[in-house]
Length: 272
Image 1 (tube, rainbow, N blue to C red):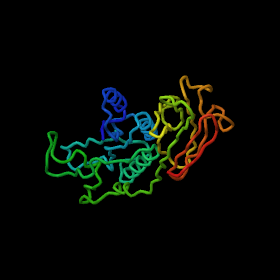
Image 2: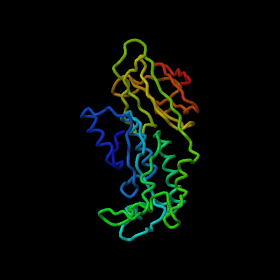
Image 3: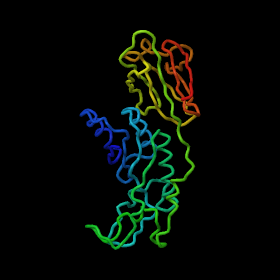
Image 4: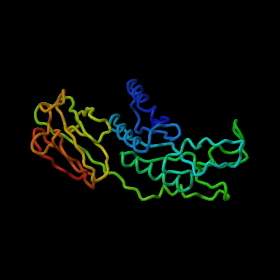
């Protein structure tokens, strides 16, 4: 995992790292603290989706927290997670903390991310000191109630919530004859707008994009054999396309390999 603090810093850091040849990692880890980020849950989901497709890596939130109160045990140890971290609809209460964590986790799953790690759920107040005061600076963002002998709060139940998990599937293009070095994909599910994804050939000669989306999602996409991406270079064509020349597909409910053959509307769906 490469762990980068706050979504706003991720893309530039990764571009610099990959340009320098740093590619031997599996997961992009992101810290997401609402008080230090301009991202809402919705825009965070879009961003995670974009990162997955642009860099071809898994993504997860590896550090986050939300307050269950704005109170504290000792005034000498000021809480870091204050009212600037609050989002509309998620008050600083045990219920608000739980609701935020459940909605954040579902957002990550809907965007194809791996999940969420909470930090730091057990930093309760003690007689220990930091340079800034005695006690905890995070006690209002733990999963333990300092008002009630550190009873476990309901926020921890986000780990057992009933989530809807996305489906792994692949889109592949089969070309006959001379193979190009890459094909290009334009899709409405990558978080990248109209920007193209470059897809190199797999070992079996197919051009494959592996992705993950909620079952039942309607997606629109088109493969191109060369640039510029237009009707002349489109690889799927026929009556199956929408008004913008895109193929329309509903994400299946089980893991699948969805294969296209260049020059046709033919599509084959195989369990994977």
